[in-house]
Image (cartoon, rainbow, N blue to C red; front, side, top):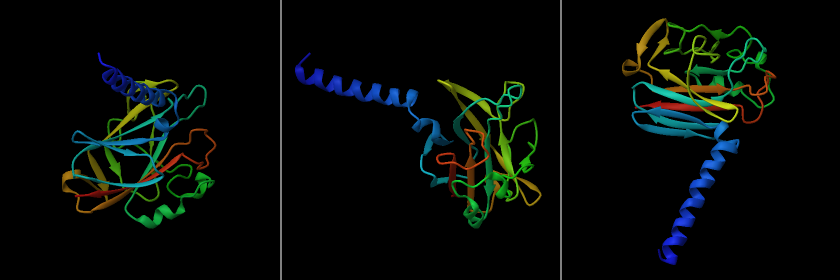
Length: 203
């Protein structure tokens, strides 16, 4: 092997192992969220971001800890789906959740069917309370584990809007706002890096 090929190989291996190390030990991947649809993946790393989706089923992958009722470790992803951008103006770092109508105590929406949230609610006064305790007590699927965190998947097939269940292929609106909050320290306050606001445009 020539010196040039050895150098190229060394550089390649450096980037591969650096990437793996960051994923295993860094905070970046824990805070990132991924939307998946039709063999495409959309990375959400900023607090406010946007993407374009087709009117087809999609899923959201995120990283968190398991819900543990015995130890009162109530880890979850709390996700509100809004149709009005003005409702997102309530969201600021340092604000307690009890001051936000769709995150206040008692605003968690019950799953529509089968204990899961395959059909999601568009509602400015409630949120989806996504937990995984075990395979019998869950509202999302467990995909993998990285150190002390788990990768969870939330599949979305339809919406519940104005009293009706509508498949994604039949929705008539063009924009939804996904407010994704993960209270990683369980202090019921929106802290830095615990919130994502994702504007979705449907084409």
